[in-house]
Image: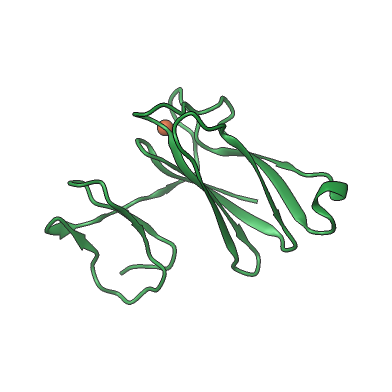
Length: 134
Ligand SMILES: [Fe+2]
């Protein structure tokens, strides 16, 4: 059963997709079922993926919620073969903001909204999906 906002990956070609509307069917790519990317919430090993969150001062975010997201307690690599593909924030009212990255980009970014930010997800091209609830 698919669920809204789940991330699936094809283990053959590498396509990655997100469920925007759950309807129950199986997602298939290259002739086989796509793999559900588990949302990991505990860092393991040397590389760090869990986002580190800092609140922006009120005078910067003008009455809303604003955060600085850093990917990894130790900055995650941003190399051609291994990098953070995107960082996403979800607000209390269900708005989603996604920042796509490429190799060489910084792993630190700001998100500002008038709504309360409740969750941050990070996607590494090698190590998959990570989530932090606020
Ligand atoms: Fe990684």
